[in-house]
Image 1 (tube, rainbow, N blue to C red):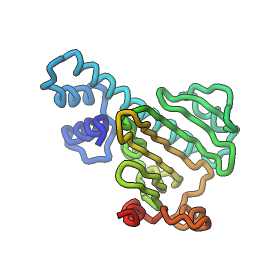
Image 2 (cartoon, rainbow, N blue to C red):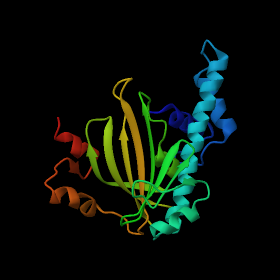
Image 3 (cartoon, one colour):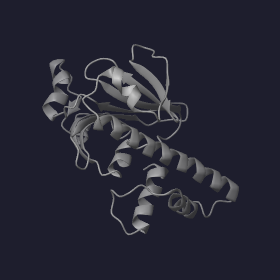
Image 4 (tube, rainbow, N blue to C red):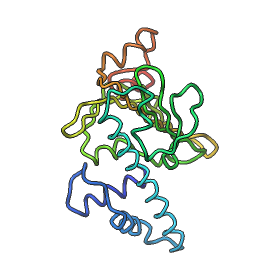
Length: 229
């Protein structure tokens, strides 16, 4: 479990709540982080670590806020997405995308193909993934149901979810994660939001793989992993 998520869950427990709950405040988050690193030899290093972890937490919550703005307006045409998301710093489109930008350390892309998709991505060498969009959206009251998965062990998976906001319409979320197996390897994290207004099903999510004879996809990550055991 990534430290930033662990700290957030500890805040929930300390406040007597049950996850999912409201995201922690900066004061709550830093207080729990300092407890974790209380035995650190260098107090200044501990403060720097906690400040970095708070930055990851803020990006998690910025992602959640941006996602909810976008899906709240779905269905959307690709050309309409950028104007709705003022928190993203946009630049000239590239690589066939309708729009490209950044949300803090995250790259943001609007796919021009159908269905219109909003994609957040991150990558680094030899670094544990510091983000968890599912947790961040759950802390905003979004309920997740997994409908399909392609998994290659515990460190790499692509999982398709139906996400349902409290009082809102369900939407599709696909999360790809690949942890770096060594210090010289790349870690990747990508979150794709379906802005078509239609929620995926297991059947619709698995159909493209089945049409190509790809058996790596299954109804769950456990079922996908089972074929490699």
